[in-house]
Length: 157
Image (tube, rainbow, N blue to C red; front, side):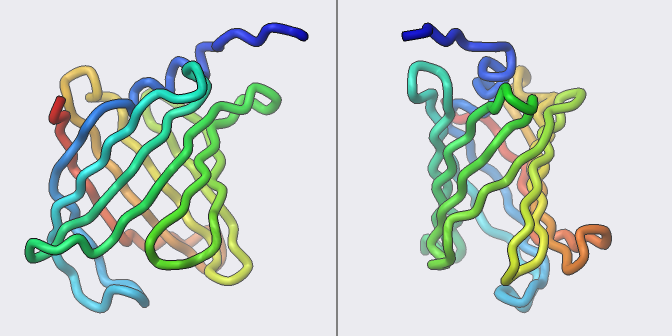
């Protein structure tokens, strides 16, 4: 059996590892009619001998957990892309996001026949200073994007 070694692409995923918390700004959307603030928390760990990062996220509003999600992040060396398999408490089907890491910004997109397009943007340039920013967008056509969530997180561990 051929031995596979971790690539720089796999090692870049380590940027997400750790415990993080911060302020989420939730913008109006079909599932969230009003702008509001919430606490976002995530815990991500290396898994599969470093070939993946496994993360759990929760959002807290008024002292109650209102949303949870689970992501498995990997690197696909066949096309030099990053992949996130996402599952959450909205009860929808699992989603796969794919994209690139360029200059410290990980941008992952998906196309869904039911909901249109989605985009996740992780601003990872400041991870070594113990913080990062996150944005989530959606779009009906894949060109005109609407901001749905902004998160500003700091490392807790």
